[in-house]
Length: 147
Image (cartoon, rainbow, N blue to C red; front, side):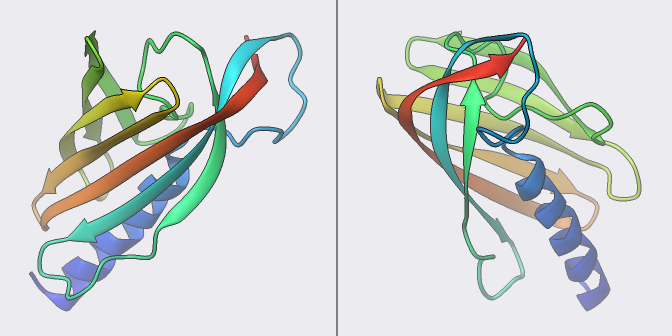
């Protein structure tokens, strides 16, 4: 992997980390709203061929109580789309495909370790190599989300 490829992958990874999770709790008032759950989510990206991992990022997100897509799913206009979201027991999984200048595909998994916590990952592969985003979430309480 060349230095230029690493730089491009790092830029895309930062974009992905900033778009995961979807919305921070209290970003802006968007009526009407429905009950949801507030989570503190920490994500950290690492890439093969990079000597060290990117710094972890922690954000607060508000998600529906019943997940029908990955928590912090992509926003309209993002170059990444989540598909095939499935939940079996305490584990959820999905596929992700990103288009554009840095096309890549991936697979994510989250395991609910308790009613108030989860851990997981998203593994991406592209022509420039592989990267992994690790995820850890902690439920903070109730929130209100836009419908």
